[in-house]
Amino acid sequence: MVGALLLTLISPLHAEAPDPYPSAARSYLLVLDDQLLWQRAPTLRLQPASLAKLLTALVALDSNWNAERWLTVSKYAASVPPSRLGLKAGEQITTGAALAAMLIRSANDACRALVESVTPDLTEFRARMNARAVRLGMRESNFVDPCGFDAAGQYTTATDLLKLAQAARTVPLISHLAALPEAQLTTRAGRTIKFMSTNALLGRLAGTEGLKTGNTSQAGQCLIAYVRRQNHDVWLIMLGGTERWWLAHGMIEDAFGSILAN
Image (cartoon, rainbow, N blue to C red; front, top):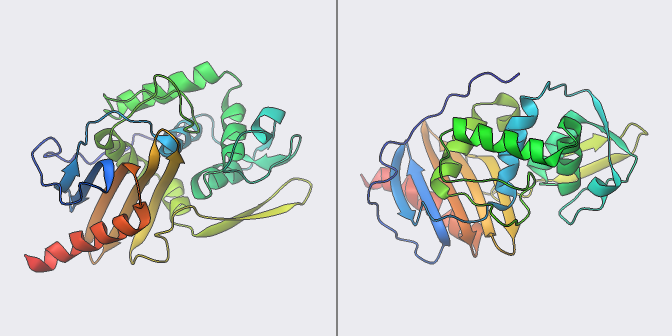
């Protein structure tokens, strides 16, 4: 059982802040050292894409978590659309491996298998997600698909996702996995699967420690980035982005540069 999650509230999130990157995303916010620096439509309701997997991870970790427990991949889980690991129906992997693949590679087959291991009832899992979101203070969110596929009635905001991201990062296992550039798992039958992180900032932008990526046709390019340098930290939440890697890199560098400018 994961204990109560410490949530750092950013008090000026609803204050006015400049928007120096109007073409970066439909919605974004950037927080430097717990202070809102830049934003664009931070309360606009949009699809979350795979950023929803952070909430799925929290729910799984609170559901009699045992990282060594074996789960069996269903035909449904094995057949979900990409991105995926290529798990086969009937294969067995540990719940810990499924969590890692879901967070690092954003693998949808691993995500579905993990969700099914918690409960075969998708409605129940969805209810747990939304109950957790409410406890985190995410008042402008409704989650329908645990893996983040576009769904009717599903939405979140950059403001709410910051709350989710900060809570998730207080969980050592999540923060550890989110910072890994690559990993591998071994099925019970001995098949080894190697996979790379979907986060292109890892290893390319100094101080990057995660946290999650997402991309669907309705959500566009999405990103939760956390970067820490010399006791300063930056959170960047992007929804409906375009060239997210170039823009995120530049925005974060500019944010750290503003420290020197002051």
